[in-house]
Image (cartoon, rainbow, N blue to C red; front, side, top):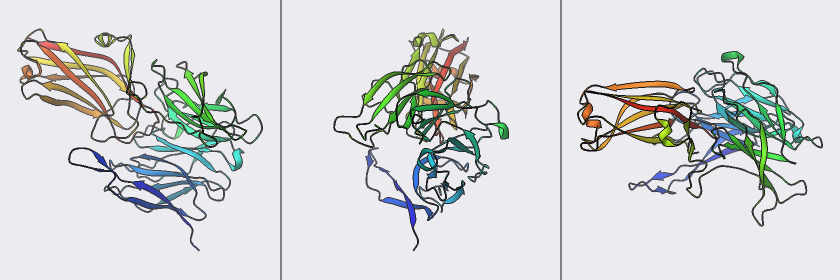
Length: 415
């Protein structure tokens, strides 16, 4: 008998008015057949470079663990799975995608919990550039790593990995572990030895966001009660270097019992907290200032058309009829791959006009764009208002939390 396991995907249609409708059927795709099965987690990103979202699935079954890659055909359907396996008993716990070796494509990283939390490694699968992956390279992690999240936790511009540890040995299931990126590229890219932080028994899941608005990535860890429930979460603040400390703890919602340790971030009450806007210094400090910055956290969902991160800044021109306008932006972002887009508001056509688009810089980079033809269209008559919009557009980012950091915006207006 053939035993297959499927990945279920709901495709949401969009009405003419822009309202999401649940009017499309579920679609199921084989992930693998026995014994290459037991999908546990999935990550989505453009792994073959054709600008649509593919699925990479973590498979935990102890006899033949690994990942399954399902390439998007471009119409929301997927090709047959391609399997990339680990050795027997190296059961996978979670998965994320990021460009760890800086070669321009998305690699995969998985936690390896092993049988009942007996392993203590993560696996880095390097993308060959076409959606196939080289054999996994293994790095030390905490005991029994289960949940996993990728973000730049120490501000060096490279993606790090944090695991929620649920080890088999008593006392080894109460930590999270940070594996810092070694700062290298290409084949030398990898991770340093793990650093552990004690967070409480049965650490199962972890997520990241800038919770306290200080510009770095903090953590929420979901843990299961040793007695079977209720479960709960711990909130950990990052000091900016990748050192974490618990600042709050919560028990699961009333009535929750077992298996309520999953964690995720969303701006549920629309107050600008994850994922919303973070400021260090006032907005006025954006102009000609490199001492303070604005960090904007991206929406969780991948949006190809709409910007995931966006800000509008305004200024005043010295004249209604400038001969030239130069817009200067110093910025960077913490997710790959994305596109950086600069638009100026055209007061003659009453709409936004794109003046520059390029692959988003990962580190702070200065971009200067000059308009010398009919520059007056970007100045509002009478008020001399100037308006610019800077957006970062997701092209398959798989960091749990990412954002754009804007250090300087400025206009230079000529005669």
